[in-house]
Amino acid sequence: MRMGEFLLWIAAGYLLGSIPFSYLLARAVKGIDLRQYGSGNVGGSNVGVWLGLWATVVAGLSDVLKAAIPVGLALRLGYGLPVALATGLAAVVGHSWSLYLGFSGGRGLSAWLGTLAVTFFPGAVYFLGWLALGRLARMTAAGALVGLVTLPVFAWWMGRPPAMMVACGVALVITLLKRLEANRLPLPVETAARRRVLLYRLLLDRDVGPREEWTRRTPAHHGR
Image (cartoon, one colour):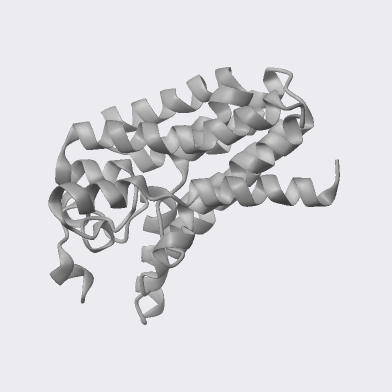
């Protein structure tokens, strides 16, 4: 395979992954910029807070498909698992740092789930199980983190090729970087407060302890 072809797949994955379905849905239905509401995350969870569960389902499925379609096409055309996984990871990066939103975005979990659904279906079920457990416990971010951390081990246990285990590790790194970066939200100046916020971001994917205080923010809070 020529490098040009590989780069085209990466570009296609990134551009498709960059399509901000949650942002577009919030704009179309309620006329709001999702980046200024709640967590500021352009993903299914945040849009669901402001539009309802139906919006989470619609946006979530759209985000799954925008990765699953190019990944499946790469496999269908015979480009192999490494290229398919690289395409899917590019979609995750696109969702996290969307070209169309000034390189802000969501956390990329739905795009990664779409990649897994095509390349490693048991892994998708495994990861979805952790997301469901986290949601039931009202700690979705913690459930997602446990799923991502243990997924490479699960892939190894299932006898998947090294490319899959590497891709699972890369997906974890992307998620951790995105949580810490948090769409460029400023960090406190004081050292102890900065460390506390970074820890909250890593474990809870928010800057404060109370969940409702974070998910119900409005533009006035974001402007502080």
